[in-house]
Length: 364
Ligand SMILES: O=C(O)CCC(=O)C(=O)O
Ligand SMILES: [Fe+2]
Image 1 (cartoon, protein in one colour):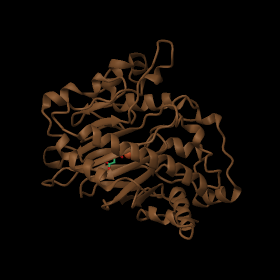
Image 2 (cartoon, rainbow, N blue to C red; image 1 turned 30 degrees about the horizontal axis):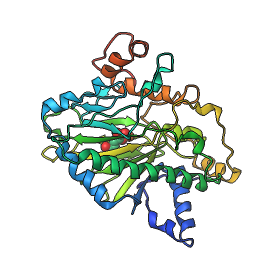
Image 3 (cartoon, helix red, strand yellow; image 1 turned 120 degrees about the vertical axis):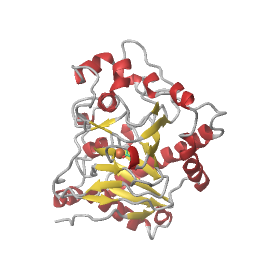
């Protein structure tokens, strides 16, 4: 039986640069994907000055004038992009104690009446005016381009680790057409005045891979191991935390483990914690149940040795087997941001919240 985990492994990207150390990286990756579902990636191929750039901007971004935050609120956006005040978001029916901006890679929405509603989900981000945060937009977009490239490369590595042809998962993207991936800048204030320590409640991420930049030196991120215990994932400078979303778990038949995670608010008196997650999306029209990948039996055996993942407190994104990926994402967004859902997707909102806007949301 695979051992349960009590820490998250750190993989060194530079092992990939030599044929003699590359197999070591691939073996570590296979182990981390199957048994843990989280890993640190050190020395990632993203310009250090751009990583430092976005880290430096993170606290400043929250100091823009309130009227500028109000101008770009998420409620304006059918794409669920923009600013959310503290307490506007729900996870598993409880308010999350965080303030955040949702941004995304560049994408022009071409939705037409008659097309599926979920195709409205990708579109233009709302950026603060240049004079309120000079250089931020360009730095963030440069950063996102590099993380996007890394995310595709990482998917090819994952295919290799699972004994698939390197391009086996390319069918989930429209790499040369048009994709949009999301990213957030998040602030978790200390607890002094808050009545809950739920920075963000237990959840799975939606898509394929998440690349999280812990942008300040605060503990708080925790992941749930196979027996349901919460394990700390403290910041390690110069690394990304990489984890697996529910869509990737589904297409890999549970080989890559989507691991339940949460963030606890900083302790009273502490400065705020900042983080910048990047969420890799897949094509919106793909139904994961329609694509069955063939994994070598010896790889599937590793999953079976791990066993079913034990206790978890996360409940979201269970519809991937039957609905297009875009629809699954849209449902998740409406549950997390019911006010935005009510405004832009009133019919779906009514199905999910028949009694109207919840004081506490119902599911996530
Ligand atoms: O802020 C973090 O460290 C993690 C955030 C997270 O898990 C999420 O927003 O999905
Ligand atoms: Fe997450």
